[in-house]
Length: 259
Ligand SMILES: C[S@@+](CC[C@H](N)C(=O)[O-])C[C@H]1O[C@@H](n2cnc3c(N)ncnc32)[C@H](O)[C@@H]1O
Image 1: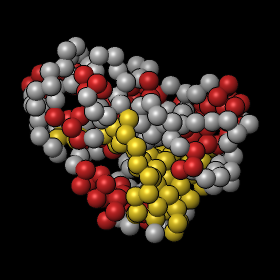
Image 2: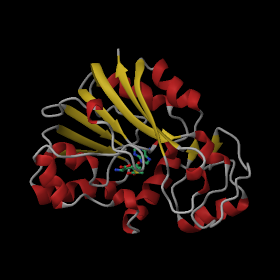
Image 3: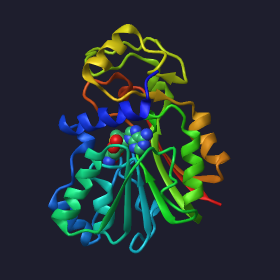
Image 4: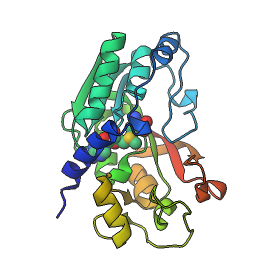
């Protein structure tokens, strides 16, 4: 059986080499602006997270969870937060180290699997920033539990994740005209469900394996782990010609408070 963690570590390292949009570090200009208090970040493809979801971030301990790539971590650090970036891919973490060195920022980087945050003690962080990435693990429930453990009481978890309907269709990048024909069911797993065409394409591309989770696991899972959902918005994929973008938003962002 495929070891998903190891497979996806290598696959994400390859995404860095291939310059996937989510592996490209922020510019010096964005860092300069962030130092002056002018910044925004995304949890989902396009919509900036409302500033009030963060409160004052200067001096806050922030965990950027599965959020390497030299993107949000350096912005938070430049804006005055105490930042730890945690990611499975050493190449993604290298992007954060590169920006930190380039900009003279103090950013901690930790490599690991998001289901296991044992590198951190209980109630250590004020805020966890967790952009769309739990589509790369088979089970999201351990992540919500670990987030709850490492957050202070009153701390906050900001997450982005896919609406499961994204995984009903055959929507690989090489399929130009995605037919809105239901091919899969939810939960979806690239380990057991893919059609031979999808499997072949993923294997040839060495693309990360994906999983489509139920909303019960995504939203219910956060609530069961001790969070109260206090903010919500939806977003689109924003790829030209993607048919669902004209029909329904396929990404979700939540603000959850640890009670
Ligand atoms: C779409 S990128 C998200 C990072 C990006 N900065 C953003 O703005 O969305 C997904 C990230 O999840 C990481 N990842 C995938 N599986 C993981 C796992 N099991 N544990 C921790 N990180 C993981 C990847 O290495 C990659 O950096």
